[in-house]
Length: 140
Image (cartoon, rainbow, N blue to C red; front, side):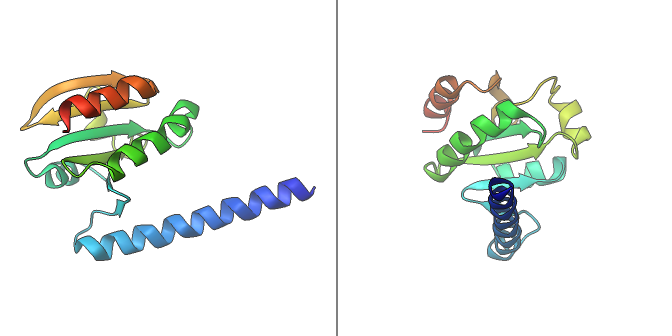
């Protein structure tokens, strides 16, 4: 009983922190694109194009119900926070069907590396070593 209470309390705290970051991210950018530790949460193709702005981009297609996504998410967050040379985008597949169709997303997690509209690389799955190698190769 007590462990369930602690888990619920931690979950509620995380939700509050996420909501606060979401609000602060919108204010800091002065746009409708929330930013979390180097990651831009996009809500559609127009947001994706705006966030890329001529930089190399790493688009992370994810879902809240996906266990491998939960495993690789902290790695992606760490890579985004330590790399200013690229735009790191997070796209929820359940609320961005248009983006999923354009990028032909068939599984999550999927990472798409782009520069000037050209796909540089694609990674499907939660392969930490491969993700780190691709970021090092394309975003430095």
